[in-house]
Image 1: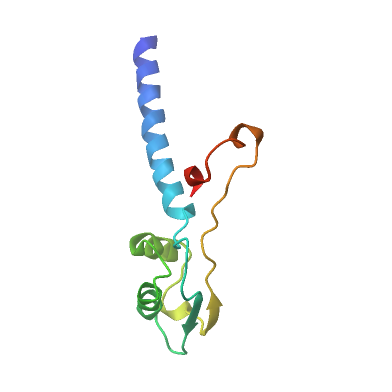
Image 2: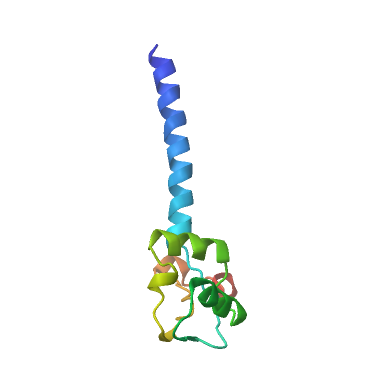
Length: 111
């Protein structure tokens, strides 16, 4: 009996971990390319969400439209909440470890 409960708990933990990772990946993964040619997004007055997404895609400022739409929905960013303006889109920062175990490592490894 204990073995069955342990197996069920393990399966529940694995399934929960899988869905938790999927949520984390959608919500917190970086969605901008490492290098941006144009990091300014201009949103005109009267723009809707589709216009914003189209501008982001045309300028190459997002990597995954599906994740952007999901995040916009979770943040209640719909047609009525689009604000006009000039926005700066930061490029993705590459984090390089600075601890002693990597002192002799090649630079190419982290690019």
